[in-house]
Amino acid sequence: MGDLTFSLQSEYDRLEAIISNISDVVSVMDAEARLLYKSPNCEKLFGWTPEDLSKGTVWDVVHPDDLHRVKYEFSEVLKQKDSTRSFDFLYLCKDMKYRLVRLTAINKVEDPNIKGVLMNYHDITSHKRILEKLIESEGKYRSVFSAVKDPIILIDLETKMIIDANDSATMIYGYSNEEFKKLNAVALFNGKVEQQKKDGSFFPAEVTTSHFEFDGKQVLLVVVKDLTSTFNEREQII
Image (cartoon, rainbow, N blue to C red):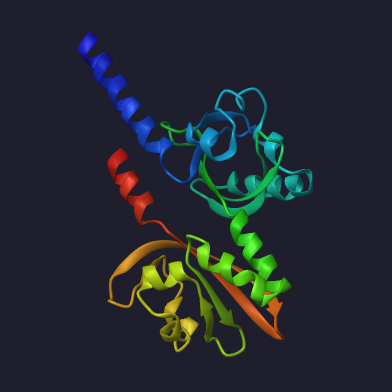
């Protein structure tokens, strides 16, 4: 029994170490919004320890202006087994400042190993700042636009042609900026979860969009989150 207990504890410690170093916070809440689990990397990313958040509800860290909408999203998730929804909201950090996060929730209430809503979320504040800089002035946004680690692609909604792509996009997809501008966005973003690189290989991705007017054009800002490391980490856990 002692060896079994040690083995289980070692496995638990290994899983905690893996989860602590991923880019998304992983958490589980019950149907009453009580927190059942929060991955320890929350402290590194947002300041909170799992113990800090164990006494209240999930709603305590949601900005008041977003609370009604977030509650609605969760109510929709809870209506059906394995239902999934993704949405953005302002999240209260321990330093009492808000960060914009993107959260994905999956209804796993009936799963005996989870018994709640499984969530993962990450900070997308920098994406919002890019959008604000774009609207404000092209000259001011360029350095920030290039520095963001996730691929960002701008698309002319009328022509469906790519207007611009940041350095991360050129690195991950393999196209130069000039090659991107010759591509039709319909061919690049075909609704599939996997994204295709110039060399024909694929990578798993989460694609999110924002629509705005810039320089007299209707523009779609596309942010691509490369999920390769997340998928590899899941395989390690399994």
